[in-house]
Amino acid sequence: MSSAAAKQCPKCGQPATDLLRVDPGMRLRVQEVLPDETFPDEICGNCYKALAANVSRGAKLRAEAGAREQNKMMMWRSRVSLVKQGRTLMTRKNYSEAAVSLEKYLRVLEVVYDKKPGELTPEIFKDSARTKEITVIASVLWDLVRIYDTTPRYADRQKKAATKLISFLQFSPLQGEIILKARQFEGSAKNKSV
Image 1: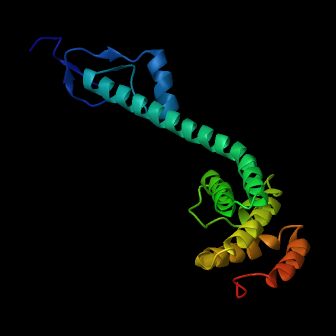
Image 2 (image 1 turned 90 degrees about the horizontal axis):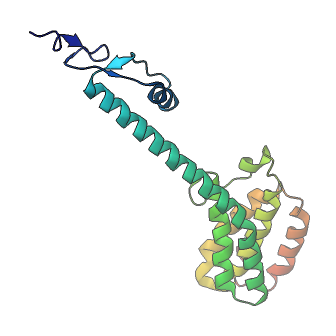
């Protein structure tokens, strides 16, 4: 047996003809991606390939996570324009498009806060710097209640929006104002039970 074949990889313990040096750049990338991973200064070709694959996979996952966060930030910034667009469409009596815009606003919040549809709660916003968002959500839900009232086929949606509105109103300074408007609206409402 030649001395070249007698080397043993300190990482996996397998025999190797050559050991590859793990350069400082690779070591740094591995520590970023796999902080708990320990490895010697020299390793066999198979271990080096596995290490490089893990570094690539970790870099890809970090890039994907960064892209998701960037997307959430862009969505967060778009939320105000969605509310404004919805309100503009309401004044033009384009209720179906207004509802779509306002529903998108709520969906943006669900995505930003990693919630499934319908899982927004006031508790998400109470302890954060975004407590004013509760007031916007309450006003959007009130608009949706009124929009959904325009046709009986949206009674279920109206009921869900009204239930959600109740949960947000108790934390909003709009509570008294919306309750007063709701009492006035009740007289002309198509779905009076809601």
